[in-house]
Length: 199
Ligand SMILES: [Zn+2]
Image (cartoon, rainbow, N blue to C red):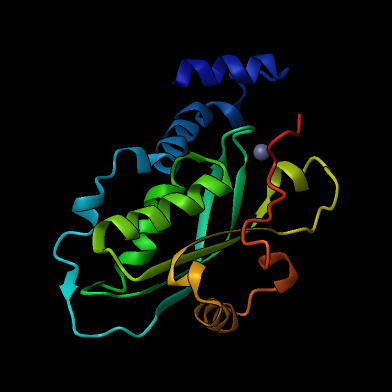
C-alpha cells in the first residue's frame, strides 16, 4: 500500500521524498486500515455476552452516537450523529454495544443509506425486536469541500421497521426524543442528499 501512496503523491505533483512526506505513506496506510477496520470485525464477537433476555417492552433509545465513515464514491469522510431505537420483544442489547455496532459498519467504505440500513438490519436480526429505528444525520466532506450545492446541508437518512413503520405514535415518540432537525424531511423517512450521482 505504501508504494501505491508514494505513486499517488507523485501523480498529484508532489515529491514523495521531501521531508514532510517521507513517512506519509506509512501513516496513510495505518489510517486507512483503521478507518476500514469494520471489514475485519465479527458482529457476533462484538455483541458477545451482551444480549439479555428481559421482560421489558418500552422503547430503548441511544441517541447522539458520533460516527465517522468514508464515502465510497470519493473516499472522503462523512460524519455526524446516529440515533438508534428499538422496542424489545424478548431481548435487549447491552447499551454500550450499540455505538460499537455503529462503528463496525461506519468503518468501511459506505453510502449513508446503506450504513443506516445495515445497523437497523443487524439489530433486527440479532434480537428480533417489535420495531427498530435508525436515523443518521451527516455532513459529507465530498460535498462541503468541493463546494457542491449547499455546503452546510446535513444529509438525513432513516430506516424504520416494525412498530416504527406501522405505528405513527411510536415513530413520533422516537423523533421527538431525538429531536431531529427538519422533521418535514423525516416524514419521507428516507430523504437523502448523499453524494450519489455527483462527479
Ligand atoms: Zn462522496
